[in-house]
Amino acid sequence: MRENRIIIGADHAGFTLKEKIKTFIGKKDLEVTDAGTDSESSVDYPDFGALVAGRVSSGEFSRGILICSSGVGMSIVANKFPRVRAVLALDEETARMSRLHNDTNILVLAAKKNDEETAFRIADAWLEGPFEAGRHARRVAKIMEIEERLARVRPTAQTTED
Image (cartoon, rainbow, N blue to C red; front, side, top):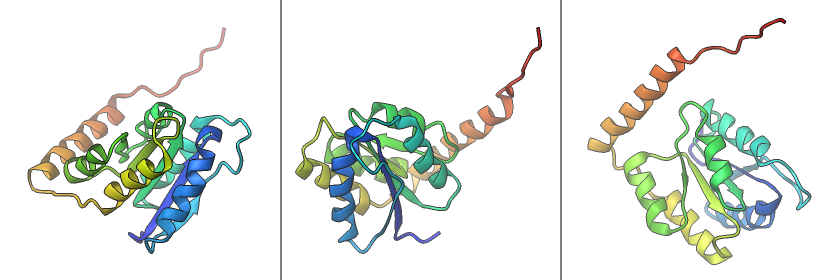
């Protein structure tokens, strides 16, 4: 996994901002992979959220960006995946602190809540923000332990025949 690779995805409501964010982060010497969507035609956000989060979860990409109307749906979907720590950031401080203290690996943007310039500043704060580690590493490790514990106790889907 190369640290200069990032995957980005959006639903129809986030398409226009995704295209602009792609150009913005492409100027930062980052290799951007676009997971879709490719227009403003109506699509289901879980499909694109799962695609991006799955590739971050697997380790293929170290980080990703998701965009939908409010950011809420994409956040819910992304955080279902193991090893994903997605943050819905509506301001620069949240984005910066999520990297410093939580080592977030997916940034979720709300296309209807932030204008383009604000979204650029949020993305910049998140992309440039390092993980502080130290006491925060212990806390992130605890989150991962909880995730592993839950994965062991979750029942598998069973079918019943009538």
